[in-house]
Length: 163
Figure (cartoon, rainbow, N blue to C red):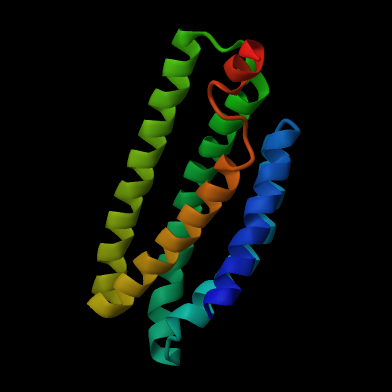
């Protein structure tokens, strides 16, 4: 099952990274999120291993979560796109703004996870809620790592200029 997660997360990381290389538009982001959403649902379904009875309770909660998560994901992509597009000429003020927006986005994502952990727990139980949290955390961290590995490192130009 871990292999399925890694492959799925790799695919979405690749999609998003490609979107950051070219300027990401709202339509581009929506297409990527839509394609990934279908694959992600299959991954979540395989990992959660829900009974038919539990599926009826879980999926409506999951759909609400995904709607909110996609908004945060879209904002994160736009922030990273702004950085990737302008990193060579960012001022300290612009960099501070990007970092502040990333912190706010991360806080929003953590609050969303807490909210939906509680909702899944209420709908199912603590173990299933923890499983949901584990899956989401794994996928989001993998995607973040994939993206970070493919955007310019802060200070990379300074090192090049010193050579």
